[in-house]
Image (tube, rainbow, N blue to C red; front, side, top):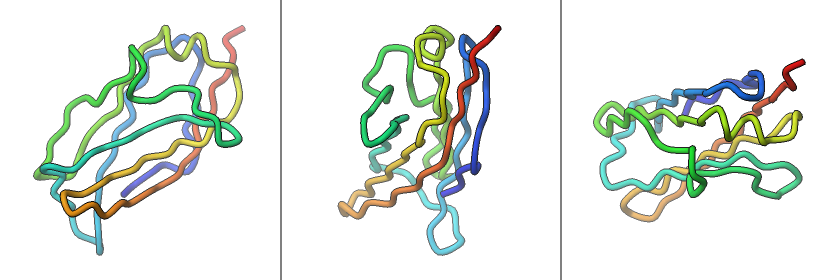
Length: 109
């Protein structure tokens, strides 16, 4: 899976975060796989796919691609800080791949 080391954006902006899933340097077909995504700090989830305003967007299973869309009102209510971005892919056989990146949200002045 491809995760940018640190993504930075301003609070109050809608964000679309693109991802491509690979295993053994080949595109991984996401058909029947579960995708989990969250931003957390010190093990505490601040926002995830179960929250209103956060969704999987443009999922293309055969190419292993998907986007996470975070609405502006979601980023606006998040404290300005750096979060861990955790992406889990659970394949149809139950195997789990986890990748962790960083997302920094800046306060708009």
